Image 1 (spheres, rainbow, N blue to C red):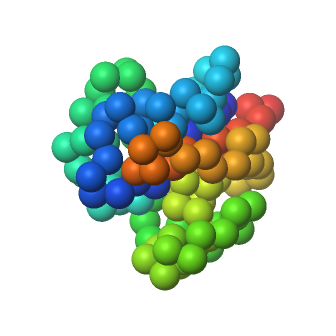
Image 2 (cartoon, helix red, strand yellow):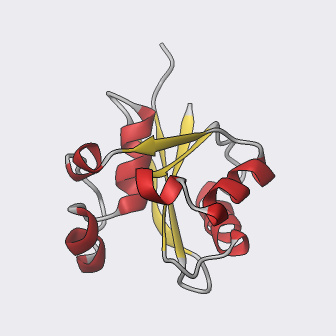
Length: 122
């Protein structure tokens, strides 16, 4: 199962999120979207999830801050207690034993990030 984790700014659009997903996923088939609980409730993210037809897994702050990320953003560290919201959300939602298969990428407008994590279904 592949989970796409997202981080995004308040001014992000559905197009920002879609571009970040396309850059991270390429031809991979994503099964679920994930982001911080507060961001999952925003109109832009819930609308994006409906548009792509994927379920959303909101991730609480404590779980996010406990994830080890491959990339480090000072802004994300200060705001969320993790080096990358996108990576932390993807890893947390994919569950125990998940591994990062695509580190965070940034949309062309700089408003959204996306990373992919995978957990083997054995």
